[in-house]
Image (cartoon, rainbow, N blue to C red; front, side):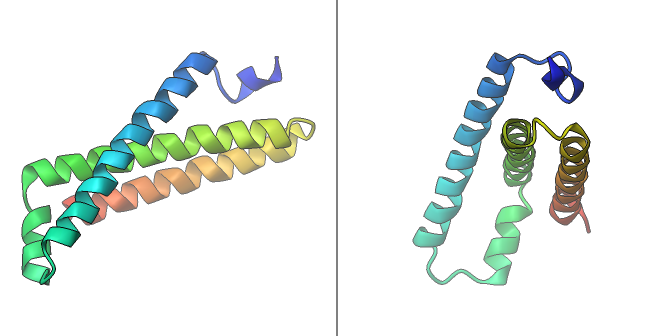
Length: 116
């Protein structure tokens, strides 16, 4: 099967599980951020910075970043495999671009979160 070229050693169950677990983590993170914003109407930079200076919030945010990267990769891999299955070269180029973009955004997010 051609999909093994771009998805070695993973089953559909693994992709399904990654999508579901990452979606739950992203939903929890979104609910927390929305709740925090609703319950802190006079939010200023100092309070926001104070929230993100706490280790648990940085870890939760890092988990959300990694979940977003995994969720995006699996979803876009499935879409490109479904819709570009006849053009292997184009599909591999698009998937390579997606991998690089997801990696850059993940590293950038980690730098913003844990940087000085």
